[in-house]
Length: 172
Image (cartoon, rainbow, N blue to C red; front, side):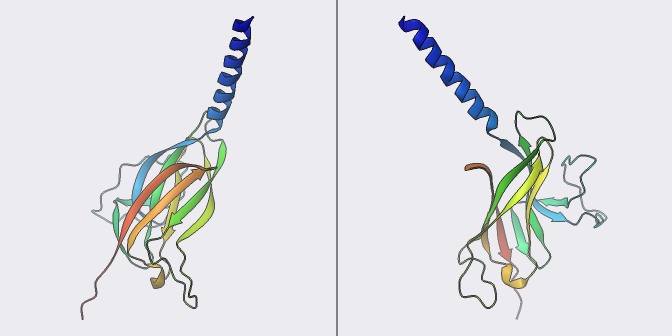
């Protein structure tokens, strides 16, 4: 009598574990560095990063794979990743995307309170390249230090990459 009860408990635990695992997404990082706009031409002599984006990709193109950039207005940098899941290829999935700024944080003009992070949603497709970037639109956004790019599926962090931002020294 004890054996069937034990078998039922083990079966229920296994089914529950399988269901929980099937819902968890993971990600494969395929690029970390700088990007150029989707219609910006590849400069002559600049090598192309070896990244497969697929024939339907219309987003920013990888420019240089690197973990260190010099902050300049217009620079776009971040990560490319491929969501992995047991769901069929190209199934839509959404993630929480967090950028963590280095100390003292980003201070918007007119504000005394620095921002230490920004959070948004990023929509992706299972098995296809997805992008998480930041673009320096203003000089006040360029904060030297380690910028972290974090992607979460619910509370599970599936991407955690950093890029060091340097500030170009001006000669006097």
